[in-house]
Length: 373
Image (cartoon, rainbow, N blue to C red; front, side, top):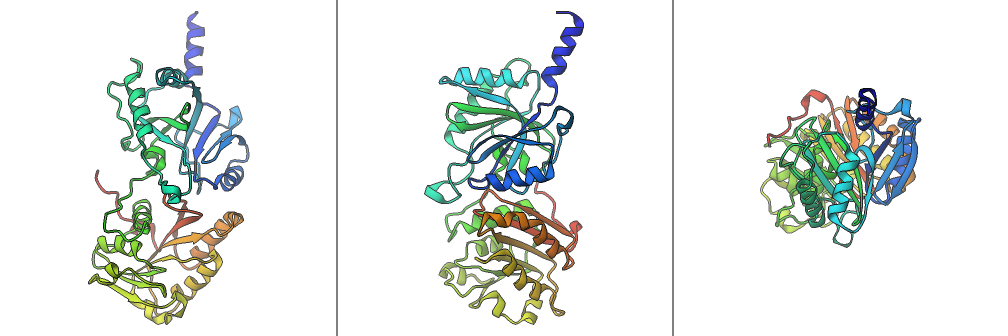
């Protein structure tokens, strides 16, 4: 091979591939395809399985290495370099490293695509035994060009390079890479670890924990927080564990463990039945009610626009009772901004079901810093 041929081969092996992979919740694939088609009109849908979708970009429109997909429904994403298939873990691992080529990585992230909705049939997104075993094998068989002792399924530091291995099927591994340029991208599969203590009365604790971590919601010990749609109390417990003084508003039964908490007050009403001026005592508001988004926003508009109310920030769950409502999310966000909330973001969390999480703050500067880990 001539020097020119060698240089060309090296450039080809490290050039950014035209394929991008995404992982999402089972059922969110159509909404994901629609938003990518809108945000990246040059892209084309390529391949899909429940919870896993790939897209192809024209050679002259491939995203940059550290790109923001700007997606609500993509839990994680990266460049795809192809798939490895076979019956032997050793053979699959060898294929994976061959597909990656000359690119060096700092971490190995391996995860299985979602099998079900969170909480369905005992499923919860996150680490699995199979993913750990595959990651260990990949690390053991890493070629000499990679750094020694690559960490497996550990949190990547900001902007580190990650080898992605998505177990679409046990013997079908899709291989890719990404830079940990966003907080969720630092974790395997984009699943930020959630804490569910033994005393939690529902999995809403984990959902609130993840929402607080993702949003960097600036609630501090001693802050007054009102929670609309609090029963049975799992999310309230997560807020109480942050030191908040929580008032839960819900006509449904609250768990006695939560009601007994010194810093918890239960108002057995619907959020819309509470006098608007009574919300003036609170700095923060969270809401998770089983209503269509516009009805939820109607209720919230009456509250936060009342002259006696000063809600500095909100953490909201908007129920997508029909997946077609996903197309209206930009309008929902604009409506929230019209109330004076300058910093508004939305994401479908790993612990969400057919719903999305919205954080709205009067000022972006009020977000809390990331915890040291």
